[in-house]
Length: 287
Image (cartoon, rainbow, N blue to C red; front, side, top):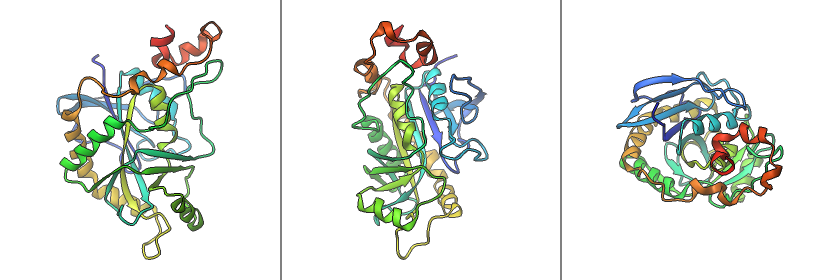
């Protein structure tokens, strides 16, 4: 089967991807358990694309329960080189209004219970993560959303919280005082694992609410989130379709060489079983 180079991970309210043709579903077994759901693979604008609902169809998984390592391992095993993450987010800025799109460039990790890496168990790697979202893919995604007619903002810090509850007002005000721009529950460890897997990763953050800091706006709730995501569904479809022809065969970024200088463990001390566990990720370096 031809490799799939582009994947879309759908967040809350995004459980399928309309517009795909020649669709097949594929279940992928991984050393980290089952992915969130079967992978839906099809063609969009002539390009093979994989779609994965992050929380599973029917929204069965909390942000903490999402099998992030299984999801990224499965996509890497298909040959995926680029991931577009679709996420529902709260705004921490007056100017980032509901139904706007933000393409963040930074992350602040405020999670507490997640497995953050493929590495460990005898194999250590320290990746560069100064730019947690691929600079090139962010720019292309920004252009695609513009072409699709969305109100889109380039740049911003994405604070990731554990969930599944929403913030208290005190928490929301403190996050805002830190200078973060948007808030959500799934960028970590997804972005970090994608970088370890040498996959370009960018987020299309759909603003659904003002969290709970705003004095005159209703506090965030599930219905508000879903209503605003549903209103943006057509925009999402158009933006992904616009994105595909903007992508070049070559990746003009450093994401594909992340591990070249990151693996620090002496080669003869690395357990063979660990290499086998994450072979799609480290195979080109460790044989």
